[in-house]
Amino acid sequence: MSVVELDDAVAVLGQFPALAGATLRVEQGEIVLLRGPNGAGKTTLLRLCAGLLPLVRGTGTVLGLDLTTHRESIRRTVGLLGHQNGLYLDLTVAENVRFWGSTVGASDDEMRVAMRRLDVAGRLADVAVSRLSAGQKRRAALACLIARRAQLWLLDEPHAGLDASARDELDDTLRQAAAAGATILVASHELERAGSLATRSVDVIAGRVHDVVPGDPGSGNHAGNQEGAR
Amino acid sequence: MSTLRIARLVAAKDLRIEWNSRVFVNQVLPFAGVTMVIFAFALDADSVLQRVAPGLVWLATLFSMLVLVQRAFAVETADGALDALRVAGVDPRAIYLGKAAALGVQLLVLEAVLLFAAVVLYGQTIPAGGWVLLVTTLISATCGLAAVGTLYGGLAAGFTGRETLLPLLTFPAVAPVLIGATRAVEAALGTAGAVVSDGWPWVGLLAVFAVAFGVGGALAFGPLIDE
Image (cartoon, rainbow over all chains, first blue to last red; front, side, top):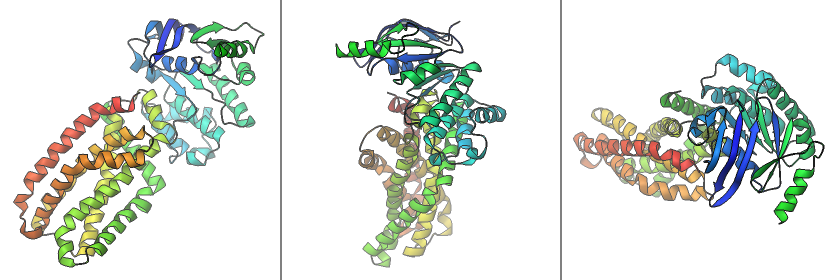
C-alpha cells in the first residue's frame, strides 16, 4: 500500500483550482521533492495530503485513509512543517516535546527517543526555544513530529532561514528519519540541495504533477517558469 | 485521547508558559495594582471609594484580562503553534476549554489580589456573612470572563490589528458580567446598605452567562480558528 495515492485530484483555493488533476504515488521511506515555481500548487498539494483542504474531485488516500471521508484522522498521522516551527517559545525543548507527545498519548520513552534522534536531548533539552538558533529550532520541531508519531512528514521550504551547517544537519536528520521508516514530501525551490536529499523528484506545474526525467535536475524549474510566464 | 484530557494538557501548558515567562507576575499584576492606585487618585474621597470599590475591582479585572487574553494567543501565534495544533487534529473544543481554564486560574488570582488592594487602598471591609457570596461570585464571574475572553481572543488572533479589535469585541460582550458581578460583590460587602440576599439573583445571572458562553464558545471555537 502506498503512503500517498492521488488520482486526478482537484483542490480549490476559493474559486481557483490550485490542484487541477494531480496524480501521485509515494511509497514508505521515500523522500520526494516537489519542484515548481511559486503558485504551481506545491503547498496546496502538501495541505491536501495533511487533510487541511477538501478533495473536490478525483480520489486520494493518505496512509490508507480516504481524503474525502477521513481528513480528521489523517491530520493525526501526518506532520506539516512550514516556514514556522509550531513551537512554544517560552517553553523549553523538553517541555515542547512533552506537550506534543502527550497529545497522542506518547510514553516518556518515546519522547526521550525522539529527542535523542534529533540530538536535542542533552544540554538543549532545558533551554527555552526562544534562545535556540534557527537550526536548533528546526530540530526541536522535528523532534515534536516524531514524538507525536507523524508517519508522513510534509515539509514546505524546510531549508529556508537556515545557515549552511544547519541545512546539513537538517538533511542528515531527514535521511535518518526516512531510513527509520518515515515518508517525506519536501516542497523546495532549492533544487540542488533538496535534489541531493530526495530519492525522487516530481514537478508540480499549473496544479498537475509530472515525473522528472532522471539526470535533468533543473528541468522542472525551467518548465515551471515558462508555464508561469504564460 | 479524550477532550477533557487534552484540555488539561493545554491548560497545564499555558500555565507553564506563564510560570516560565513571569509575564503575569511581573507585568499583569503590577498593571492591575497601578490601575487601582490611579482610581484612588481620581476619586480622592474615602466614602466615594468605598461606595464604588466593587465596580472598580471589576473594571481593573477587565482591563487586566485584555492583557492576559492577548498574551494567551500571542504565545500561540508567535511560531505558528495554533496552526500546528489544528494541523495535528487536536480537538478545538479541548483547546478552547484548556485555554479558558488557564485564563480562569489567572483571573482568580488577579481578582483576589485586587480585592486585597481594595481593602488596603480604599479601606473596604469584608463582613463575615458575605464570604460565601463573595467566593461564589468570583468563581461564576471568572468562568464567564474566561469563556468570553478565550472565544474572542481566538477570533481576534487571526486578524491584523488584533490589539484594538479585542477590546471592541470583548467589552460589550462582558457588560452583563460587569453589572452582575458588581451588584453581587456590593451585596457581599454590604455596600450602600445592600444585603447578602440581594446578591444571589445576580450570581444566577453570572452562572447562566458562563454556561451559555462556555458551551457556545466550545462549539464555535473550531470553525473560528479553522480556515
